[in-house]
Amino acid sequence: MTRRKQHRFLQNQESANVIELGKPFYKTCKGRWRDEYFQNTNPIVLELACGKGEYTVGLSQAFPAKNFIGIDIKGDRIARGSQAAMNLGLPNVAFLRTDIRYLLEFFEEGEVNEIWITFPDPQPRPKQEKHRLTYPSFLSLYKQILVPQGTLHLKTDNPELFAYSVQVLQEEGFTDLQYTTDLYNSPLNAIHFGIKTKYEQLFFDKGFTINYLQCKRV
Image 1: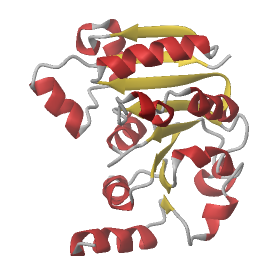
Image 2: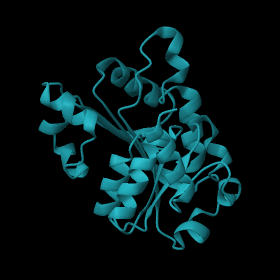
Image 3: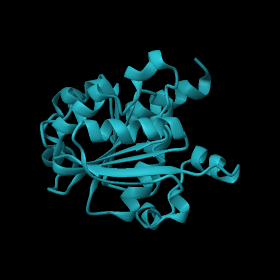
Image 4: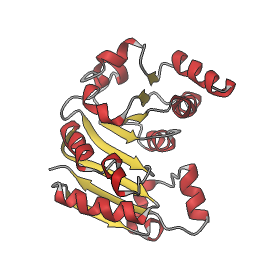
């Protein structure tokens, strides 16, 4: 492990906005995010596979009356988002370090209002299909923790993953599907508030179009 990673892991241990194994709230957070962590009744928004939490931090600034939780297994990435949120003095941000497969251990049924999936690993090979974050088993988790009519967002530069996701979401009963294969030339761009991840900016600068969809849980 590099010295830089060690430093970031130590930061996470000391940061109140990082929830991870070894901290008391990690085992008791299910159903208690609003009452105990955020201490309000505002909507909860998740960013899955959040990386450095660029969307978590960006959206939390745009929507101070919502609570945002970035989720990732990589502690060194979460540390950057955590520090950014603290430097900006954002009380409506938390980061949860866990595998997305275990969402039901951390959120009650209907506890979440909105989910963002931003530039996930496309897992392109057929044998990797079950690891895609829009595979039916993942969608089943999202359905359980989302409120009725809760919104799911997906952004990706990968056209194959996007086409796959559009099809599977419809098959799995998500409704009110809106999508575009060229976000920045679409009316749907208005809801993104100019927020771009580092990799999104790189893709965009190279001339790639950005695919985006939103849909709702029944």
